[in-house]
Image 1 (cartoon, rainbow, N blue to C red):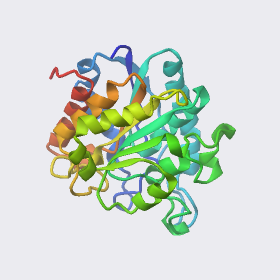
Image 2: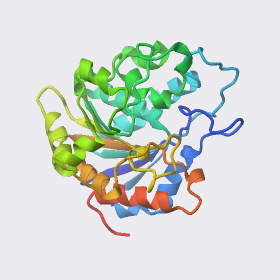
Image 3: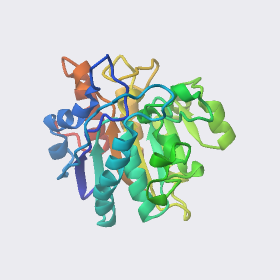
Image 4: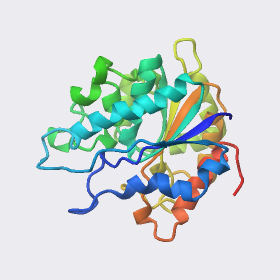
Length: 302
């Protein structure tokens, strides 16, 4: 793949504090992957940093809606500006988070350009909204960004620039959701395709991911964005996330999925989220994630 540009989006605005008074450490993801040579190893150019606002919950309480909402609403268009300029220039943005709320920046950018889909390689669907959850459960946009992007969220986040929805239900695909996830029933009703870990293994990771990419290669859709959440990996190899679910993908399975999706001419960009270096004292989880992304791009230089 030519013209890859790496953009840092070190926002942790969408996650709950891991402990009182402690901010989530996933804002260090971009620096950790850069320290492992990701820019050089995939032959990318440096697209700089989009600096987020300060993490500050203020006097937010459960039931108040999304916390840090004003900050996320301010940050999302700025990140979208950076992504949009590279998409329009024919380049492939690789955005290093950060938490999953940064995906809103990509969705908004692509909504400005045309009609694009989303392939989310994620242990969970990040589809929490008032239609399936009580008001006091709403708050962390990093667990709600796909719902927000489809218009199922408060308008100060879901209708930026009057572009609601950024994504259509029929243009979304999920890969790597855990078997038995509570969101699967809702997706069946909405006809949002999803591949659980068990289904992925039965079909074969590469073949299944290729079929997903092909399904978005239609005349109706201009392409798709690839969202990678590190928690799709099994906690045995990726414990450094905010919510580690068992029975996840192994590194070679993730690499096969990424290779198939990134090889598609319809894939226009990608983000990586949730890895928290603070939870990875010996650095092994960071090595696993970086190697999987690098190998996904077909670049194996260490």
